[in-house]
Length: 116
Image (cartoon, rainbow, N blue to C red; front, top):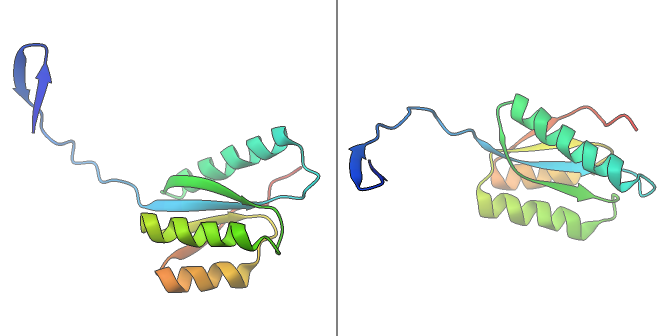
């Protein structure tokens, strides 16, 4: 690989670092939880996924078990990114997530439920 630095061309060797597998983080919190707590829980979940060895594509929040649109977004993003895992926290519809994971050949990793 050639990198340009000013007018000088120099060869840059690949670092040899393997990219992290991708994951989609899925979070469920009660409707009454404040935006500050939601923001903190999203960051905590992303960091947890990173500690498990994943690069987080996005943290998607599901507001309730009946939030069909949100579960659809999870599946659509998983298909588009070819993610390796769903990293999940909170009271989620586990059967729906398992069905998505089975169709797309993903792993489900559970994270601790956020302390509110």
